[in-house]
Length: 327
Image (cartoon, rainbow, N blue to C red; front, side):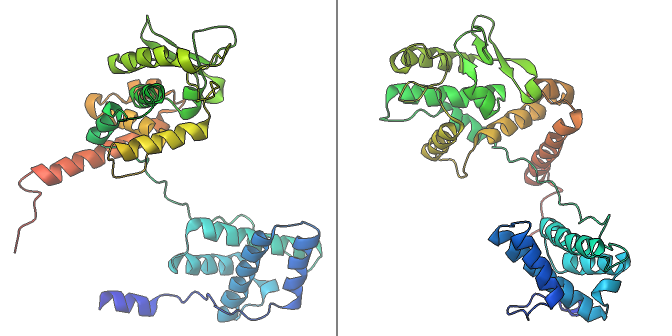
């Protein structure tokens, strides 16, 4: 009953399936966008939809478009949001409306732009997706059966470095053999340290665990059979040249599928898992910030939300007062 009552009192947001023809002045603006601004067909479709919504909302309130005020637009924006439209979609609609009123203003047809300064509701930032400890370990320990031994060793080493060191995919494929001149990154086996060039051309170093070092040693033996003469890249393809971002992503998806993981895995998910699992174990936010190479700790703090989700799940499963009574 409550849901039905809420639906009955909600503001109806027009979303016509067969919209009427737009007024001539609005069609003239669309023609301007098409011929002068050379907007892509898809962009014109979105702008046309935004204008239909504007006409319908203004018509509901009996407001002539050229006399619309900021409070009118705020109300229309609230109606769109209340109708379930995503913040990004509302932002695009506001952009179209803002452009229309700017064009009218340049032609002396309106005194003010009622959309100027208005912003769409902020979209909630999604939490980074991280694997559970069990799934991350299963992926790291998986070795392809019946695969080319060189590729199997390479892919295993890639997973160990992504998850064991929290590397970005760009940092991974930028690794070279040794710290030669011009090297963007390298692994110091003797010192068990990886050195990379991170975001903003900032260098950082981090520890390399025993499992990753062992995987690296096995891969280096196989790499010698694949690498083209003079190739400095640590990770190479069948052709002996440096691996690309897309190749790493494709091989990682394949690895996860073979390991029986229930979700698609991408390189940054392993970086998220690295950070989340470190924080779960240590609780040291500053140390995780330094290991990830984040300039601001606020970027790292998002993993505290992941950590809280993990703790809440443990509580729900284990605490006797968290369990729902049956019957």
